[in-house]
Length: 185
Image (cartoon, rainbow, N blue to C red; front, side, top):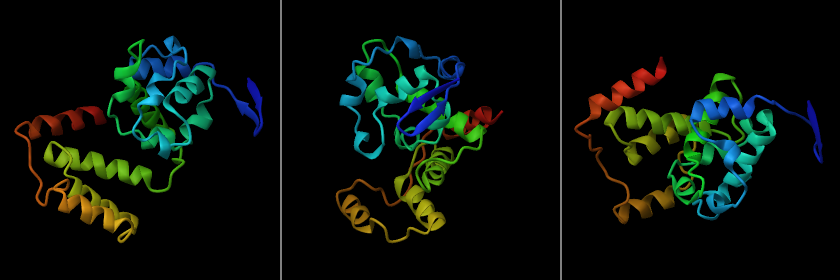
């Protein structure tokens, strides 16, 4: 089935909502577009669509278009949207499911190097039991080749105490690694 848009016909996947609901455990069809999720999103300006639009695209079965978007990759999982949702939809879980599906299907993200950033973030959490921003960003910068991009921001964050010089492990580091290993299965 197809829908006609300004950009031409778009393929609809009528099982997309069911698949995302199954993967995320969230009642996506209960979203009635109140936009409370989007009004509090701290990264809304960086994505090409708001969180409520992501949910609507799932409801409409616009799988291909959504999996290629950068919106699913820029979500930081802060849970602000889920806390604001009157129906209790945890949109961060939905975004995780969308990223997982995109990776499985080999869909290239809509934002250059964002998958690399995502991988560096997860590897940092796996290594230390939590994210160490300095190490994570250094690995990302070396692998992406963006060595000097936004270096001024990094210096300001360091001077304000927002970037720790050395990583701190958590006591449950082994448990965190076990969760990562379990998730790979």
